[in-house]
Amino acid sequence: MRRGRLVIYLVLIVVAVVIFAVLYFLLRGGLGGAQSDATPTPEIRYVDIVTAAQYIYPGTPITEEMLGTMQIPEGTYIEGVFTDKLSVVGQYAQYPIAQGIPITTAMVSLTPGDVNLPGSAWSPFIPQGLTAISVPITRLSSVAYGIRDGDYVNVLVTLLVVDVDSAYQTATPNTTAVVSGAAYPLEGPPMLTIGVSPTGPYGRAELVDQLQEVVYIIPSETQRPRLVSQLIMQRVQVLHVGTFPLPGEPTSELLMAPEPGTEPTAASQPAEGEEPVQVVRPDLITLMVAPQDAVTLNYLIFSGAQITLTLRNPNDVDLYPATNSATLEYLMSQYNISIPAKVPYAVEPRIDQLIQPYLPNDSTYVQPSE
View 1: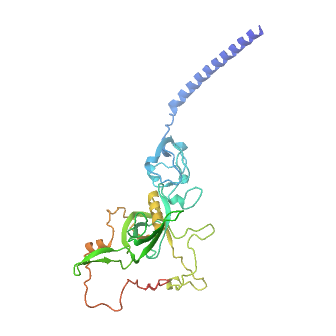
View 2: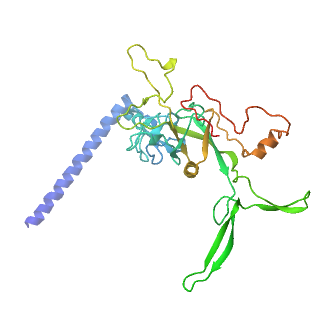
């Protein structure tokens, strides 16, 4: 009986609540209708804001394809949120930006290296898909130290090539040897007596018409390497010239003792009371290249090849057509260089090699070998 009464009470309470709610909304609706005749409901305005259409990794240059938009009520707009895609394109993500997140001014930067990433401060400057590698330079191979961080260069390589015996991997011609005797001991392999030809490198037999007999031509010297030079890479951007500063070192200019034989120039003379400043002459440069080009440069460095850099205009984005390798034959034919005739006179003193002129700014001068 008690349970039945409890159910009846609950039903009555629910019915009373429903009746009260209906009356309340009817009365409120009447009042609202009367007010709407006096003041119309204000229209809600929306504004488009820029969002990430995909996940954007930190340090990535942002393109228009990475961006989307979404609408929010005008009253909820927060200062710092972008409303135009073009104002974001070309900037760099400072932090990881998830898809659908509104992009604010605090998330991006116009500077490539201004990225909140662990590790080196230089790595964010390397475009994705490229890698940095350092190559040695001299004053001659670096456009007289005229290259700066961010410049674009072409890469030339110069090699010396010789013929080799494919089996021995030694330079030809091979030397000759003659078996002059043989012994066959009871135990062990046969013993051969071999005499190396005293004439040295292997020559060739030729018929001399005047003498009407065959003579043996012997090389007067070892094989001369053949020089070749070629353009191998174009529009390569420079990450840094010189050695990267370590933690605690100054980042503007590293100072060192002057090179032997040099004195400070007039431009480097310090003011009264200041210490003399000597600028470091860089001995290497770091380039940003494709992974395969990095492998190529690494091979050339350890093979002893000479690498030369040429400076480009930053607005020159075109790639040159394939160039011809510079060889002695190419120079003679393309530039119409004549073979000097054998004449009964010569210059004095005798010239057996080209001597590079001495330049006053050279720290050392190497006397050519005799």
